[in-house]
Image (cartoon, rainbow, N blue to C red; front, side):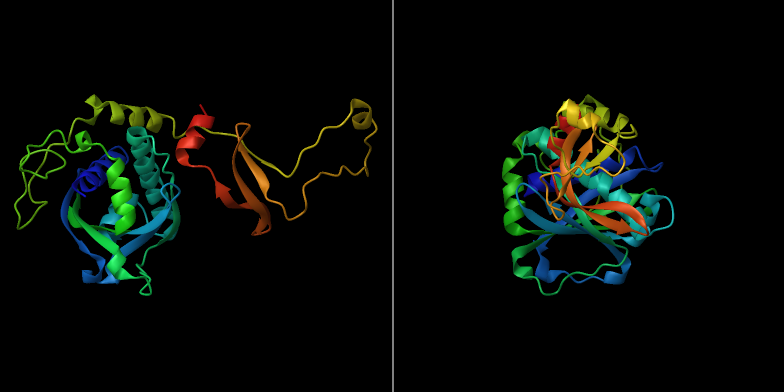
Length: 288
Protein backbone atom coordinates (compact mmCIF):
# COMPACT_ATOMS: atom_id res chain seq x y z
CA UNK A 1 0.00 0.00 0.00
CA UNK A 2 3.00 2.34 0.24
CA UNK A 3 2.74 3.02 -3.49
CA UNK A 4 -0.83 4.23 -3.03
CA UNK A 5 0.09 6.29 0.05
CA UNK A 6 2.92 8.00 -1.86
CA UNK A 7 0.70 8.55 -4.88
CA UNK A 8 -1.98 10.27 -2.78
CA UNK A 9 0.61 12.52 -1.12
CA UNK A 10 2.01 13.69 -4.45
CA UNK A 11 -1.39 14.28 -5.98
CA UNK A 12 -2.70 16.29 -3.01
CA UNK A 13 0.27 18.67 -3.25
CA UNK A 14 0.20 18.86 -7.04
CA UNK A 15 -3.56 19.43 -7.23
CA UNK A 16 -3.55 22.27 -4.71
CA UNK A 17 -0.23 24.06 -5.09
CA UNK A 18 -1.26 26.20 -8.08
CA UNK A 19 -4.73 27.07 -6.78
CA UNK A 20 -3.79 28.10 -3.23
CA UNK A 21 -1.46 30.99 -2.46
CA UNK A 22 0.06 29.17 0.51
CA UNK A 23 2.62 26.45 1.12
CA UNK A 24 1.07 22.97 0.93
CA UNK A 25 2.55 20.01 2.79
CA UNK A 26 1.14 16.49 3.02
CA UNK A 27 2.69 13.48 4.70
CA UNK A 28 1.40 9.98 5.23
CA UNK A 29 1.04 9.22 8.93
CA UNK A 30 -0.57 5.83 9.49
CA UNK A 31 -2.70 3.08 8.04
CA UNK A 32 -5.02 0.81 9.99
CA UNK A 33 -8.47 -0.75 10.05
CA UNK A 34 -11.31 1.73 9.76
CA UNK A 35 -12.92 0.17 12.84
CA UNK A 36 -10.26 1.96 14.91
CA UNK A 37 -11.32 5.39 13.68
CA UNK A 38 -12.12 7.66 16.62
CA UNK A 39 -12.60 11.30 15.64
CA UNK A 40 -14.91 14.22 16.34
CA UNK A 41 -16.96 14.20 13.13
CA UNK A 42 -18.09 17.79 13.66
CA UNK A 43 -14.52 18.90 12.95
CA UNK A 44 -14.42 17.25 9.51
CA UNK A 45 -15.97 17.69 6.08
CA UNK A 46 -16.86 14.59 4.08
CA UNK A 47 -16.66 13.85 0.37
CA UNK A 48 -17.97 10.63 -1.15
CA UNK A 49 -16.19 9.43 -4.30
CA UNK A 50 -17.38 6.89 -6.87
CA UNK A 51 -14.94 5.06 -9.14
CA UNK A 52 -15.96 3.73 -12.54
CA UNK A 53 -13.03 1.37 -13.06
CA UNK A 54 -12.43 -0.50 -10.90
CA UNK A 55 -15.95 -0.08 -9.54
CA UNK A 56 -15.94 1.10 -5.96
CA UNK A 57 -16.63 3.96 -3.59
CA UNK A 58 -14.90 5.56 -0.63
CA UNK A 59 -14.91 8.83 1.28
CA UNK A 60 -12.42 11.53 2.21
CA UNK A 61 -12.54 13.43 5.52
CA UNK A 62 -10.80 16.80 5.70
CA UNK A 63 -10.56 18.98 8.80
CA UNK A 64 -12.74 22.07 8.41
CA UNK A 65 -10.01 24.54 9.36
CA UNK A 66 -7.87 23.19 6.52
CA UNK A 67 -10.82 23.05 4.11
CA UNK A 68 -11.61 26.73 4.75
CA UNK A 69 -8.11 27.73 3.72
CA UNK A 70 -8.28 25.55 0.63
CA UNK A 71 -11.56 26.97 -0.71
CA UNK A 72 -10.36 30.48 0.19
CA UNK A 73 -13.95 31.62 0.80
CA UNK A 74 -16.94 30.63 2.91
CA UNK A 75 -16.96 26.88 3.48
CA UNK A 76 -20.23 25.56 2.06
CA UNK A 77 -21.28 22.34 0.36
CA UNK A 78 -20.92 24.15 -2.99
CA UNK A 79 -17.40 25.52 -2.38
CA UNK A 80 -16.29 22.18 -0.95
CA UNK A 81 -17.70 20.39 -4.01
CA UNK A 82 -15.71 22.67 -6.34
CA UNK A 83 -12.52 21.91 -4.42
CA UNK A 84 -13.04 18.16 -4.29
CA UNK A 85 -14.18 17.93 -7.90
CA UNK A 86 -10.86 19.42 -9.00
CA UNK A 87 -8.95 17.09 -6.69
CA UNK A 88 -10.80 13.95 -7.83
CA UNK A 89 -10.29 15.02 -11.45
CA UNK A 90 -6.55 15.53 -10.92
CA UNK A 91 -6.23 12.23 -9.08
CA UNK A 92 -8.03 10.06 -11.63
CA UNK A 93 -6.48 11.88 -14.61
CA UNK A 94 -2.96 11.42 -13.26
CA UNK A 95 -3.71 7.81 -12.32
CA UNK A 96 -4.99 7.19 -15.87
CA UNK A 97 -1.89 8.86 -17.30
CA UNK A 98 0.39 6.47 -15.42
CA UNK A 99 -1.61 3.24 -15.59
CA UNK A 100 -3.92 3.70 -18.63
CA UNK A 101 -6.66 2.38 -16.35
CA UNK A 102 -9.38 4.92 -17.31
CA UNK A 103 -10.46 5.08 -13.69
CA UNK A 104 -12.87 8.02 -13.84
CA UNK A 105 -13.41 9.18 -10.27
CA UNK A 106 -16.51 11.25 -9.62
CA UNK A 107 -17.71 13.20 -6.58
CA UNK A 108 -21.08 11.70 -5.64
CA UNK A 109 -21.81 13.88 -2.59
CA UNK A 110 -20.19 16.38 -0.23
CA UNK A 111 -21.04 17.70 3.21
CA UNK A 112 -19.36 20.24 5.49
CA UNK A 113 -20.27 17.89 8.34
CA UNK A 114 -18.97 14.32 8.31
CA UNK A 115 -21.79 11.79 8.32
CA UNK A 116 -20.16 8.38 8.05
CA UNK A 117 -22.62 5.57 7.47
CA UNK A 118 -22.34 3.43 10.59
CA UNK A 119 -24.12 0.56 8.84
CA UNK A 120 -21.11 -0.24 6.61
CA UNK A 121 -18.89 -3.16 7.49
CA UNK A 122 -15.94 -1.30 8.97
CA UNK A 123 -13.75 -4.42 8.93
CA UNK A 124 -13.72 -4.20 5.12
CA UNK A 125 -12.43 -0.62 5.11
CA UNK A 126 -8.97 0.81 5.49
CA UNK A 127 -8.13 4.12 7.17
CA UNK A 128 -5.26 6.11 5.63
CA UNK A 129 -4.34 9.15 7.73
CA UNK A 130 -2.27 12.09 6.49
CA UNK A 131 -0.85 15.12 8.25
CA UNK A 132 -1.55 18.14 6.06
CA UNK A 133 -0.53 21.77 6.41
CA UNK A 134 -1.75 24.84 4.52
CA UNK A 135 0.55 27.69 5.43
CA UNK A 136 0.77 27.65 9.23
CA UNK A 137 -2.50 25.74 9.70
CA UNK A 138 -2.07 22.03 10.40
CA UNK A 139 -4.69 19.32 10.34
CA UNK A 140 -5.71 15.85 9.23
CA UNK A 141 -6.75 14.33 5.92
CA UNK A 142 -8.36 10.89 6.17
CA UNK A 143 -9.11 8.43 3.38
CA UNK A 144 -11.56 5.65 4.21
CA UNK A 145 -11.37 3.11 1.42
CA UNK A 146 -12.43 -0.55 0.94
CA UNK A 147 -9.43 -2.84 1.38
CA UNK A 148 -10.10 -4.76 -1.83
CA UNK A 149 -10.50 -1.53 -3.82
CA UNK A 150 -7.25 -0.15 -2.37
CA UNK A 151 -5.47 -3.35 -3.33
CA UNK A 152 -6.77 -3.23 -6.91
CA UNK A 153 -5.69 0.33 -7.61
CA UNK A 154 -2.35 -0.15 -5.82
CA UNK A 155 -1.48 -3.13 -8.02
CA UNK A 156 -1.70 -0.95 -11.13
CA UNK A 157 0.78 1.64 -9.82
CA UNK A 158 4.33 0.91 -11.01
CA UNK A 159 7.09 0.79 -8.42
CA UNK A 160 8.84 3.79 -9.92
CA UNK A 161 5.91 6.04 -8.93
CA UNK A 162 7.15 6.05 -5.37
CA UNK A 163 8.73 9.32 -4.37
CA UNK A 164 11.89 9.35 -6.45
CA UNK A 165 13.22 12.40 -4.60
CA UNK A 166 13.43 10.58 -1.28
CA UNK A 167 15.97 8.14 0.10
CA UNK A 168 14.84 4.62 0.99
CA UNK A 169 14.59 5.42 4.70
CA UNK A 170 12.28 8.46 4.48
CA UNK A 171 8.60 8.87 3.68
CA UNK A 172 8.67 12.65 3.24
CA UNK A 173 6.70 13.48 0.12
CA UNK A 174 7.45 17.14 -0.44
CA UNK A 175 11.20 17.20 0.00
CA UNK A 176 13.67 17.40 2.83
CA UNK A 177 14.33 17.56 5.73
CA UNK A 178 12.32 14.67 7.19
CA UNK A 179 9.77 15.51 9.85
CA UNK A 180 10.01 14.23 13.38
CA UNK A 181 7.81 11.30 14.47
CA UNK A 182 6.34 13.47 17.23
CA UNK A 183 5.12 16.12 14.79
CA UNK A 184 5.34 14.97 11.14
CA UNK A 185 4.53 18.38 9.64
CA UNK A 186 6.79 20.58 11.78
CA UNK A 187 9.69 20.48 9.32
CA UNK A 188 9.83 23.14 6.63
CA UNK A 189 10.12 21.26 3.33
CA UNK A 190 10.99 22.37 -0.14
CA UNK A 191 8.41 21.45 -2.82
CA UNK A 192 9.30 18.73 -5.29
CA UNK A 193 10.16 19.90 -8.78
CA UNK A 194 7.17 18.38 -10.52
CA UNK A 195 7.88 20.34 -13.69
CA UNK A 196 10.73 17.94 -14.53
CA UNK A 197 8.42 14.91 -14.27
CA UNK A 198 6.78 13.94 -17.56
CA UNK A 199 3.58 12.68 -15.94
CA UNK A 200 3.15 15.94 -14.05
CA UNK A 201 4.05 17.93 -17.14
CA UNK A 202 1.07 16.42 -18.94
CA UNK A 203 -1.20 17.35 -16.04
CA UNK A 204 0.14 20.90 -15.98
CA UNK A 205 -0.73 21.25 -19.69
CA UNK A 206 -4.25 20.11 -18.87
CA UNK A 207 -4.56 22.63 -16.03
CA UNK A 208 -3.87 25.46 -18.49
CA UNK A 209 -6.96 24.43 -20.48
CA UNK A 210 -9.38 24.12 -17.55
CA UNK A 211 -10.96 27.58 -18.08
CA UNK A 212 -11.75 27.04 -21.77
CA UNK A 213 -15.48 27.35 -22.45
CA UNK A 214 -17.16 24.36 -24.14
CA UNK A 215 -20.56 24.20 -25.80
CA UNK A 216 -22.94 21.78 -24.07
CA UNK A 217 -25.99 20.59 -26.02
CA UNK A 218 -28.84 18.31 -24.95
CA UNK A 219 -30.27 16.13 -27.71
CA UNK A 220 -33.72 14.64 -27.09
CA UNK A 221 -33.71 12.68 -30.34
CA UNK A 222 -32.69 12.59 -33.99
CA UNK A 223 -34.02 11.24 -37.26
CA UNK A 224 -33.38 11.42 -40.99
CA UNK A 225 -35.87 13.31 -43.14
CA UNK A 226 -36.20 13.84 -46.87
CA UNK A 227 -35.60 17.36 -48.12
CA UNK A 228 -39.16 17.54 -49.48
CA UNK A 229 -40.55 16.67 -46.04
CA UNK A 230 -38.39 19.32 -44.38
CA UNK A 231 -39.70 21.92 -46.83
CA UNK A 232 -43.29 20.97 -45.97
CA UNK A 233 -42.84 21.85 -42.28
CA UNK A 234 -45.05 24.71 -41.04
CA UNK A 235 -46.03 26.01 -37.60
CA UNK A 236 -48.09 23.25 -36.00
CA UNK A 237 -46.33 20.38 -37.81
CA UNK A 238 -45.28 17.47 -35.61
CA UNK A 239 -41.96 15.68 -35.98
CA UNK A 240 -42.01 12.27 -34.31
CA UNK A 241 -38.80 10.64 -33.09
CA UNK A 242 -38.21 6.99 -32.29
CA UNK A 243 -37.21 7.76 -28.71
CA UNK A 244 -39.87 7.32 -26.04
CA UNK A 245 -40.69 10.19 -23.70
CA UNK A 246 -38.91 8.55 -20.73
CA UNK A 247 -35.78 7.55 -22.65
CA UNK A 248 -32.49 9.19 -21.50
CA UNK A 249 -31.38 12.19 -23.54
CA UNK A 250 -27.90 12.65 -24.96
CA UNK A 251 -25.55 15.27 -23.49
CA UNK A 252 -23.03 16.50 -26.04
CA UNK A 253 -19.93 18.61 -25.44
CA UNK A 254 -18.46 20.13 -28.59
CA UNK A 255 -20.56 17.73 -30.64
CA UNK A 256 -19.42 14.56 -28.82
CA UNK A 257 -21.76 12.49 -26.63
CA UNK A 258 -20.21 12.19 -23.18
CA UNK A 259 -23.23 11.43 -20.97
CA UNK A 260 -26.93 10.61 -20.78
CA UNK A 261 -29.55 12.02 -18.45
CA UNK A 262 -33.16 12.68 -17.55
CA UNK A 263 -34.98 15.97 -18.11
CA UNK A 264 -35.75 17.73 -14.81
CA UNK A 265 -37.00 21.11 -13.63
CA UNK A 266 -34.61 23.11 -11.45
CA UNK A 267 -36.16 26.22 -9.87
CA UNK A 268 -38.36 26.65 -12.90
CA UNK A 269 -35.53 26.13 -15.37
CA UNK A 270 -34.93 23.28 -17.80
CA UNK A 271 -32.21 20.95 -16.53
CA UNK A 272 -30.68 17.51 -16.91
CA UNK A 273 -29.94 14.98 -14.19
CA UNK A 274 -27.01 12.87 -15.36
CA UNK A 275 -27.72 9.13 -15.17
CA UNK A 276 -24.55 7.85 -16.83
CA UNK A 277 -21.29 9.46 -17.92
CA UNK A 278 -18.08 8.31 -19.53
CA UNK A 279 -14.83 8.24 -17.57
CA UNK A 280 -12.75 11.39 -17.39
CA UNK A 281 -10.07 9.73 -19.51
CA UNK A 282 -12.62 8.94 -22.23
CA UNK A 283 -14.10 12.44 -22.09
CA UNK A 284 -10.68 14.03 -22.49
CA UNK A 285 -9.90 11.84 -25.49
CA UNK A 286 -13.19 12.79 -27.16
CA UNK A 287 -12.56 16.51 -26.64
CA UNK A 288 -9.07 16.54 -28.13
